[in-house]
Image (cartoon, rainbow, N blue to C red):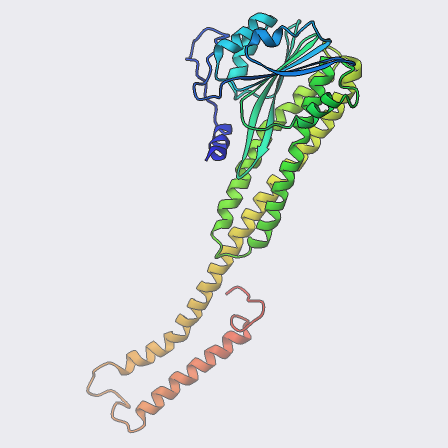
Length: 365
């Protein structure tokens, strides 16, 4: 399925440029969706929203409004991406990082524009992440998404349409903060899903016959690893944004970015906690399976031990010698059976007193 393919892609790194290719080469993935350009241009008193057919039509709004947010969904057209770079004077290395969607979260200051990369998270059958590339300019914000349906920015768009809060009164750095904050906050409901899955697996892990437990635990472990790889670099990137040496970020917005940093630290701690819990549940399940095997082996060992003297007696009196004692004795058969029964009962009593059978808490042999 598409979700599973996205999860596998998050665990691998695949570059389309050949080794030794010129830096800044923009090669789009032919299987990626075609770009859909959405524009939200606004100020404290005015607001306009529309879909642009071309990068030129979108960038034409810059300067006509105090702030323009251009969101591009889909990276399947390298010509359109390069056109944005020409119109906004974007560095080609940042455009190359935009189309190669395996990037770690990072911050690059190119002087006229601040380039920010982070990963948004989604959760369905399996966890997957999507790269978000942001170009923070003086009076515009350009964002690129891979084209996966849905994102975590619906509430931000609603606030812009309704004019709630300060987002329509402040600059592009504050809008970038709101998007970063929304992307980080979306990690929490995803982690709640995995917390519920771990609760369910904790109830099933002591059932050795449930063969699906290990498979599901492995899936959870893999998904948590994807989340860890997505969120850990973002902590360093936000710490960099919170410093004073990033001129594109105002002191007012920097305070809010430090709050985002706190949220990232919380998410990292939750992920590490769930990873440890997953490892503990895997160990507990393996211990449960091992204990069941040991119990089975103990029962088989006891049965074999009980039959050892019976086999010995039957073997002695089953030999075909002419001059064996008791071979022609009238009560020889009855005495042999009695010896077998007594030895069996004696061994069962001995095993019971040792706590090896018929005990509520079996002990090791």
